[in-house]
Length: 192
Image (cartoon, rainbow, N blue to C red; front, side, top):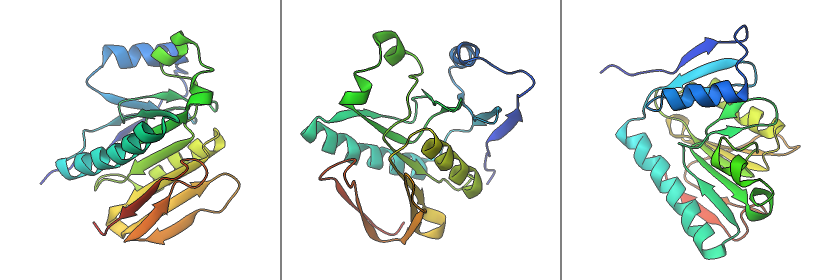
């Protein structure tokens, strides 16, 4: 079976502005594009059914918790955020507190919002490079991320990212806490 891997193009010499990147995404609406803070353009292939199902379940758990608490906004993997460090990233699951989201103008909210989520989940699929996802998590941290989970089914573990702390690695199965970022949120993650 053939598996598609992301295509990474170094576009430093092109130096796309935020507006040019936005237009590129609009013109190529069927492509999932990201731009790293280092100036690399990433063209992501669609995920397979297993990864898509896992992503949907994680998003559903966060959505349900948020629906009950009404503390913020939940975003899908189709959402691109313009990070303070210059990257344009799309986490598999993202959450932003109402307090921070409401500070954005209507125009900022409708585009690639210039904000780093408070919380993200990145789910590694079979074709994802663990190193590239770890770099992406560090990019989020350098942009203001407060809590992030890198779910790695291939190694049966989750890497937990927090501001000013070493990455914590927990083996599956485990129970994850939303800590003070997603108060009251708890999730039992089985073996995959």
